[in-house]
Length: 389
Image (cartoon, rainbow, N blue to C red; front, side, top):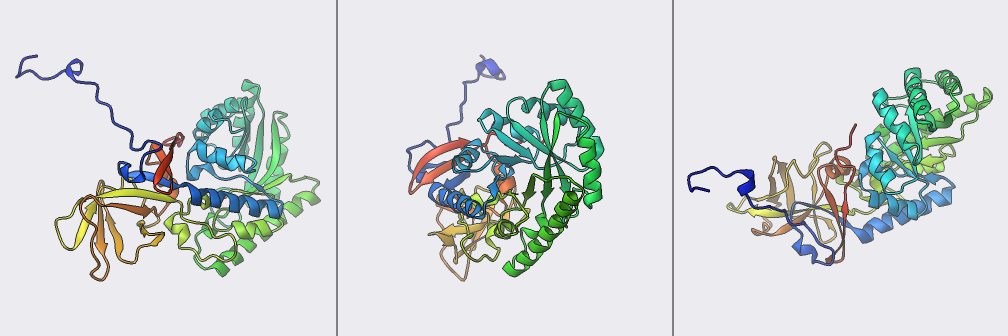
């Protein structure tokens, strides 16, 4: 190639990005920004939740939308989880491929194409999905008839969220009648989820609102029973309400997801008793510029962290930092300031952040670096990243 000629693809060397982390390497060697999982804290969280579900006689079906990582789901199932939830049809694909045998799509489907996908997945795993309209049932019936598969169907009821779900038992009964017309569809029960309860900060207020939601759900279950319709499963709940859901006597299955990681937003809640979970998810970020005495700049911004639930917390020595604060997220940069004249971290210093919201933060990363102590133990692919159809 002449010196003044433009390079062509054939002229370029085969560039390869080195892995951010390698099992067995020091944690300090991880290239940043990197999503980290403290495996010891993570495992304690899984054990604590499974023990609470077992003690209550309630099945645990953790939500995989929180992490999109098959290795996490496999660890939960190994401890006794009955299966997992996914929020979108496509999100279930890598979990089926990883051997998760029971998946509930805790959402309605937006198109017949998605019903076709679920009907195909149902040939390889036990799949269920939510409905709140007869049109959705027709699409599921058509897809399963063509695929020769069976699907479980949950009717979602609105228990105060004001989002998806039918209003009352009469509407549920109409949909149950529609489901019964198709032998390849089976009525599995009710989904009753109130997302607005999950992040109420005061423990007493969450308890009160969760009780109201459970009472409303119980009334629908009782009305179905009076009409001669059995409700095999009542599924719902989340990490912020799970202690109340387990004790309600209404839910037979709970769907917490973030408990395994505890983002900053959930950590801001007030908790009591044994179901207080540990922060296990962190984002490692490096100080890339330190030219002033007022702040430093790190390499983790909006493309590494979701800030819909607020900015991340800085984590130092097992607790939220009392001397440093992450104050601003730009596309590729984060601004960290010191509190009350404390020392700023040096150029090249590595910090750990607790993401404000774990679910969309996971969706920004390809892999999850598991560490134990000061060593990298595992690197897990976030295989369902971007699968939001």
